[in-house]
Amino acid sequence: MSQSKLRFWFCLASTTLIGIFWISLARLSKLDLPALLPICLIFGLIVWITTSSTFFRRYVGEATPESLGAIRIITCTIMLIMVLGVEDLATSAWLPGEMRRPMGTMQLFYLLPGFGSFVRSQTSLQLFEGLIALLLSKPQKN
Image 1 (cartoon, one colour):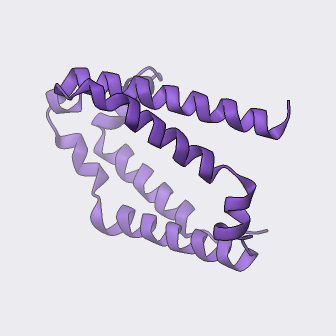
Image 2 (tube, rainbow, N blue to C red):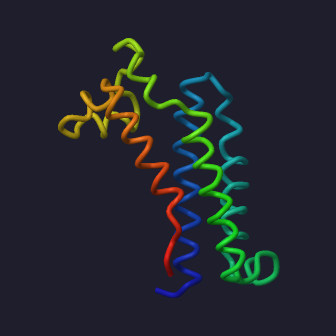
């Protein structure tokens, strides 16, 4: 399959998915459904433009190893600050059981054996938070 055909089908699939998302959102929040077609077309046009090789050559450019390294450093630093300074994961074990109900994607994690007891244990959450901090602060070898 040629690259232009693949790009076309990718854009069509993404436009269809945004349409399905918009319909479900409209049903939940009583939004206006006639706005669906222009939103889907605009989204499809954005995907079509941003997936072209000309767009990347002209506006994005080639990433250098230095810029990718800087992005990695900034991202890991922000995540490390969130883990060590902002979020206190262990206190979520104190939440009542009604507030720790599995919803959405978290239902998949609750299918794992022992995950329910893991989120109820303050010690295991503190160890997990320490492990994440250690992994984020570990220097990467290339």
